[in-house]
Length: 281
Image 1 (tube, one colour):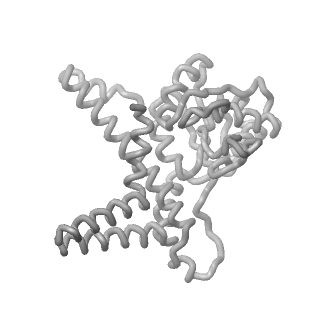
Image 2 (cartoon, helix red, strand yellow; image 1 turned 30 degrees about the horizontal axis):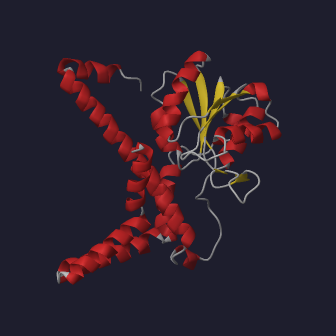
Image 3 (spheres, helix red, strand yellow; image 1 turned 135 degrees about the vertical axis):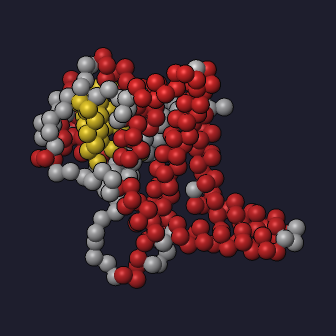
């Protein structure tokens, strides 16, 4: 089975909605089995999960803990780099009945990459991103993103594409050869502020200088009655889910890293320390 599909299924089960549903299911089973204490605990946890995830204060702090790690920089203060690398995400593909590409959540990363290019921060832009699931008659997201950048003034010869990746880890993996072929020494990494901690952790492993250039910022200071910070909302529930997606992704990456080290130490115990110390930071 496709491992990306497996990851998506597991993720859905541990997001707030899936977790609350699973806890409610256990509540029902335990109630039928007359395990009153455990059923009450399961039911309470299901309710608590929904209350926390839909609370604007909780969702905001959870997301801010990620976005604050690499704050958005003023464009004028960013130095020149060899290339701008923008990670795919945020475009709504032209699937029926839609007749054209639409700008969705996180699509600001494409405009930010254009902004950096027009400001002279790099002479080339690499767009990385395929489609998570293949769509009949639909091109990779990077191809549609290229068309947008061209409409916004980035010339065709300045844009390079990577169209195979389906995850952030694959973004990094498939760009390794392209970066080497183009003799790139420094990159401006563009993605959503919420996504930047996970992306930067992967890309800083490359043998190039990587500077994070965060795009869309979701948690912003705005004037509003304080009561709305405590009232549950669908937008807060979505924000909690997106933030947890990033935390789960980072945890999964650490687990994979540990497994690789363990596998390597099994085959060559004396080489482990040397391999870890010599790995790029």
